[in-house]
Image 1: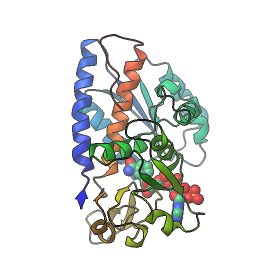
Image 2: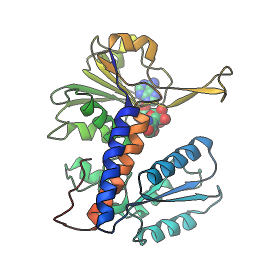
Image 3: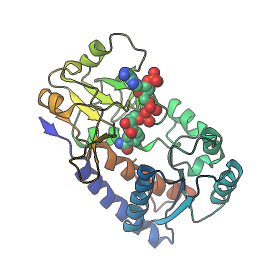
Length: 302
Ligand code: NDP
């Protein structure tokens, strides 16, 4: 059994990103990412800070807007419009979930699709479904695909079972792996909370990807001997013995499942670091695209 080290793979991708940023600097360009956060949810705050820190370390221009919880829909939309018009900003991300009074869908639709590095704008969702490579693909699904590819897991022709059908992970991931071509061409089954015979279906997977937000839901009985398991879940479990009072676990019962697998991602240190790596990569791509066709600059591989 091999543990897929998302930290190490993300570090290698960051090195590639750093080189891309240096190449762009020669052409007088600096990729810029704006991250907007409403309220002070501690998990969201720490994600936003991590994104900002990594972007700066890699030489990107990073702007962080930490707004009060009571910010109105209009104020938020006005900020997004201002960022749409800001030439130094190539990627815009509004940290999810926003407070309950915010219409998240309307905010997503306000973001310029060319700066939608999260890939949630309907125009980008449509491009993913249409197999059009000019859109942006959401970062977590991209990270899962890249983890598999970098670990030498054959995706083509494999039966991939995706557990979860959210618009952030499950659905775009299914579309991505169903695409034609390299690191795709999978046979994809998506299961969710209403699926019958769930265990039977997950046990038929060559590659099982869990994204349901249920701590340690996937047990040994869900997994076929020799399968590859990718755990997207990030769940906080109370743990008085830990310094922070909680520990992070995935959607997979790692201890029970790992011995059966050919390869598995840990939590933390699996998919999580890849999501940020793909965000940086999408932002660089947005910057390159903003230059238009340019003979000296290649589009980085997503
Ligand atoms: P959502 O809550 O939006 O979606 C959960 C999905 O899982 C739904 O489709 C739901 O089904 C399905 N589901 C829930 N319970 C069950 C069950 N008992 N059996 C089968 N299916 C079930 O979650 P997200 O997709 O946003 O996130 C999933 C997990 O991934 C979370 O732990 C989240 O923290 C983590 N995450 C990690 C990221 C990373 O960077 N590593 C990034 C994004 C998310 P239904 O549609 O029927 O309700």
